[in-house]
Image 1 (cartoon, one colour):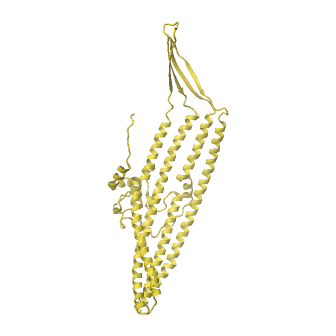
Image 2 (cartoon, helix red, strand yellow):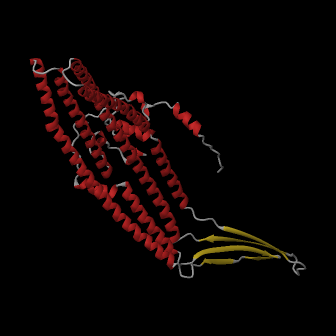
Image 3 (cartoon, one colour):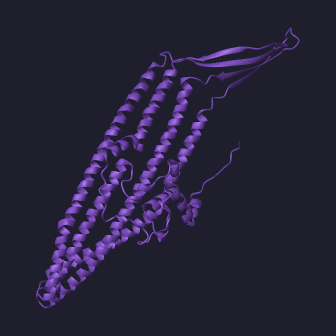
Length: 444
């Protein structure tokens, strides 16, 4: 095998990314491995299609995938036994009585790669593969949660921008009506300044929401590799966004999470690694053996020596190192208990927040929003009857939009709680991702 130099250039990588061509066919192929029943519609990007794009195009996921390949190669290398040592000797004897004054010899020292030392080394390499795979799965979850958060923030921002624009229009009419009343001497300029402040606040909120739509769209594009032009408002779909189902885990899902979360499995691997380390230290209390067959040509005489070598343990028979390894194993066991307890607490906290968020959203939809709409309808009737003017009518109509913005804040809290619960369980609880039927190899 030969060494091949492969230099990397950040500028070249950046240039390649700038001219990268979007390939929907590649994403469609990935989607087919995840769920054969669903086909990619470039005009409709739901969460499952974006997840398929995430698996193919996300740079962090690709780096974690490369780490799995590296650990696999290292595990294969760990099975190779250490090479022997060849020692060549020569000797010249002056005024030797034999026919030849020369002595030539060679000894091959072959370590016996057996027992606990070999098993500990191979086990450690295998555990590194497990760690790399768990890190890969955790990276997928991290990127997936970032994508879900960006989709939620974008959908909320779109609705806030729409409500903010309507509120701005109403407050502009309200401001104009109050300004006419100030000119007529029917109200004070202080009232006009208060309306002006409300108008400025509405404009700022609408502008902020519009800016968040752009920012979150770019975040989705960065995570998935889908161009911003493909992520227009009409193409990104989330059918049940405004009425999310109650996402509460069942006992089976909780048990599954406590034994299948990648972070917990990493702690399990750490415990297994401490077991392998202890096994290796126990093996080192015995001598390491090597055999040394040789050949010697001594001034015309052929000799075949054979040696047996021992690498002796420390004077304490490696007991201090064994005690230290036992302490690390005990610590790893406690860390596993703590990880399971923390995961269980995270699930409880996420479920509690999911219920509280839904109760807050339901309260707004049950009382605050209907009350605001009822007042707006009454103001509409009174305006037609001439009982109120445009100033009072605009104030009542603004109340509906203010309640709508409060509803959107509560809806954002619900989706944030669902995101936290899915993260705690490491599994989707709703949406098209539940249709995934592919094997684990589909994630590779």
